[in-house]
Length: 276
Image (cartoon, rainbow, N blue to C red; front, side, top):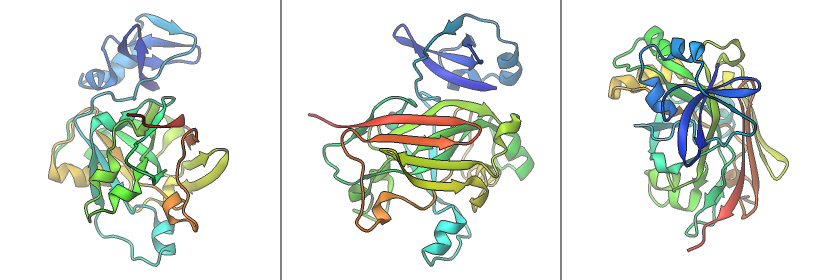
């Protein structure tokens, strides 16, 4: 199944996205819907109001409690940089206000001249989980989505802590929907992931190259803090980012950023420079 949050008449609604319509799930957004312990059965059986035609996608999770991001998580990219594979995940965080919908504009902040792209597989949590073994961790995953961790490099590297470059407001597209973990199209190992900027393919990888796979990340994070429905894990980006190019390349006002994952979908966002 595909589950999403859409904008309708000035508010948002959680929906199941079918081939020709979206079906209302009875909650204002997907985070609220995932808090039902039987959300999967509710989604499959839903027969609420139908929305037809073009849908206005909000961030798939509008107000998650946590957005946890992982750095340095693609084997090929790490090895080609001459580094050793990490023994533990590198973690940082985003705030919910950084998120935008799959077709919304991405804001390029006025205070940054080095906004970079990072295509990523997003994991959405569907059940409370703490101190999980791999089996329980896997069962806690509601599904997978598309995310781009658009990053202000000139802010990220001001200090050794990355957060300030990672969570500028309205910079991180996520969606358009999550594809539930039981869907055969989205076994998280072996999905093709790509990023295009103005028609140029700048990143291309396979999620089978992840050092720490989604279930491993859920188990690891659950040792630190309880994960709850609607939490997002951004699993890391492969090589091809603009900051590493010679010369470096960054997103510009008007750039079209397309982030695509096989079996899930794509985000298609126009970048717009912030005006004050």
